[in-house]
Length: 254
Image (cartoon, rainbow, N blue to C red; front, top):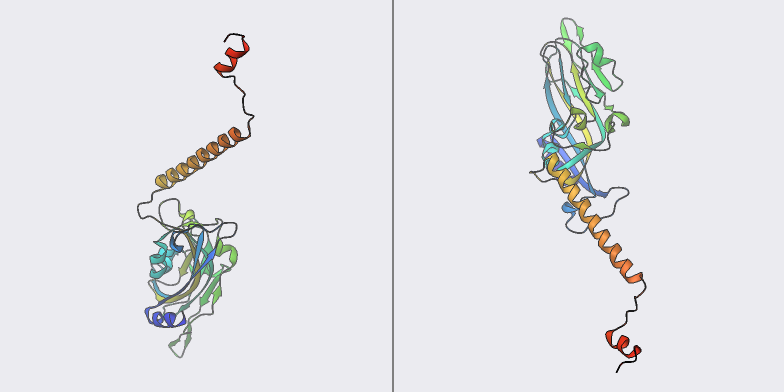
């Protein structure tokens, strides 16, 4: 796996794949990709670029926005969740002022929109602009920020891998916010671990998923009912019935 990661390092998005069994479940038969209760865990590394609009920018931290590779992998599953996240930013051009990058929990209606609001987030990093003798001295990168577990996991156990199907809070546990000056642009670096489960059918819709779940429950109920009736039939006493021949003999007639 290390050699694969090194080969992908030049593509800006590196990942490792592993499998584990979800707690409280049993493995099902069939190929590993068809086992619904198998949780697939992957590690990613991505370097992206972000340009500000009127000094601010933001995006929900779902697989589609996290990295192209994460989006590709998520397309094969129904649910996802994040296990860990750390980030930092890297200067790629001379900024016109200080900037900040941070993570806020959930999908709030009103996001931090300026340097002060993003900078006061607990999970954030700031980059000052220092002027010396008329020139800008740039810090090449910020420190790594390890996002707190409660933000990474969010309020739900699992999230939809298809953004927009439901409300935004069902798609991502948290949101990344940028703030600075004007239309400044800078690089950001992410290292994160995601987990996926339930191989997806591209034709899935919420109604189809609900219908299939109901059909499975109905099938289980019918099987249980048939087994119950068979057991009752086995355990119930045998009824002794008189044959016509016996009745004729007991009546005294030949």
